Length: 84
Image (cartoon, rainbow, N blue to C red):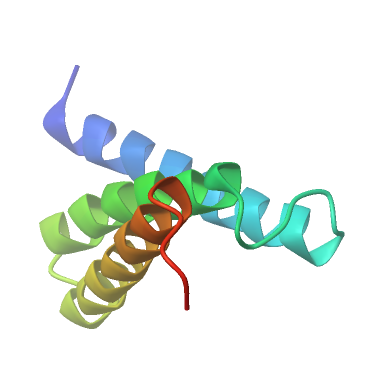
């Protein structure tokens, strides 16, 4: 598989994951403090981070780095039941 096609594919998958997470929370199918929501955010942002970095879209890469860090912190709190 061509590298560009691979990068485009992971970008699309990441986009779908983030939109799906937003849709599920917005329509109250899952909660913002669920593992499913945070995993969708984490994996989606990582995939989009790779895609945007490849294309040199560094403002978008920066946003996805922050999105990834937020998801990691949220998952840590959920998994280890850390209080606010």
